[in-house]
Image (cartoon, rainbow over all chains, first blue to last red; front, top):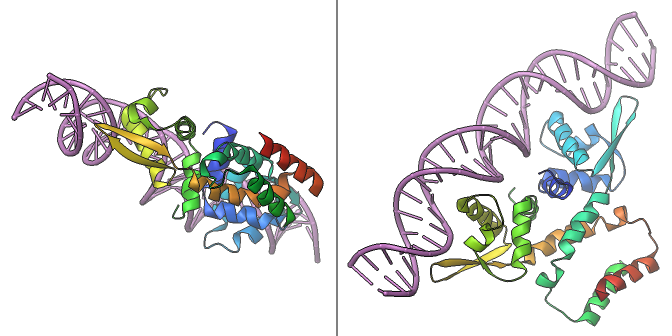
Length: 109
Length: 109
DNA sequence: CGCATCCTTAACCTAATGGTTCTGAAACGC
DNA sequence: GCGTTTCAGAACCATTAGGTTAAGGATGCG
């Protein structure tokens, strides 16, 4: 798992880590806040945060004794770009106009 | 890794498996053909194919003694959909018109 | 300074991952 | 039907992943 893309996909393969990322969309959070929803110890969550950090998906700062995690979604773009190369193979409709309308609708929400 | 999405991301976390998927965009292939580019034994490739199959990313048929693998990109759509929820957090520009133009350009290629 | 708070690190365990070699099954060609 | 080809499965091994508990480091407060 030497490359960045593998690290990102590996990080996303764990539901706990995906939930952490989802939580961080609402803003920075302490380790205790991030750990609260999960039935696991706080060091376990710390390990997940380390994985996310090494994949570049979060950054971390300090505020007093607390460590704050921040979402860094940049690497997700690389994952999206990789997936984009397969769009033609999962798409039901190959109509370009239809695609445009779908994307307009996506853009609307 | 009980859920489908985790299985898909886990499957994509390995460069060998991503390369296999890339190869299969050019059409079905035998195990020997898929194994050829890699410096690993045939059973190792068989294991990777099993992971891809269990993630729903390939299907397999027989032709004589050969086993053919076929790309099944459907599950990639779920991965793409998950990533889509983070678009707003990686985009530099949040201008809706800019988004539209980017998407039109994507649609063009 | 002394202590509480918040979190990380260390040490450990189990199970899964990714590889190997060796054996064996399934389908065809003769 | 017998051997060949093509692949999967079994058995094994080393490493990584995901969890635990216990201990310790950094920061702020009285």
